[in-house]
Length: 85
Image 1 (cartoon, helix red, strand yellow):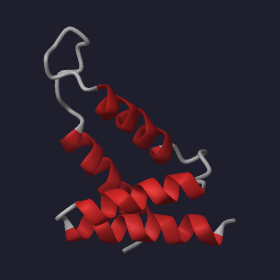
Image 2 (cartoon, helix red, strand yellow):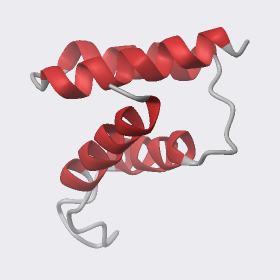
Image 3 (cartoon, one colour):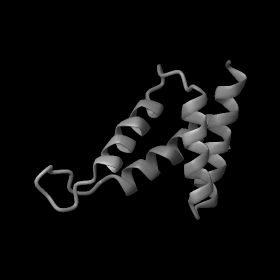
Image 4 (cartoon, rainbow, N blue to C red):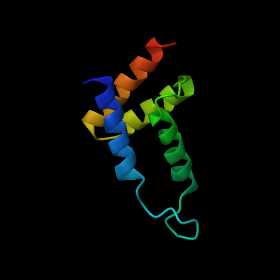
């Protein structure tokens, strides 16, 4: 898997998980999910430099997901970020 594909998998995860009603008056509004949504948007920005905290949080998502492809993509993103430090 190429790094571009890995970011594509993370973006697909973002689109699937975070495309729900985010109206603050809605019962479905979840502040934690909104924060995670903003954080993943930052990660997907090519100019953003991934730090150790980001790597830890990405690894948490990788451990909790049942999607093997997403998990592999996150591992590649983390490995790439660590090699740039």
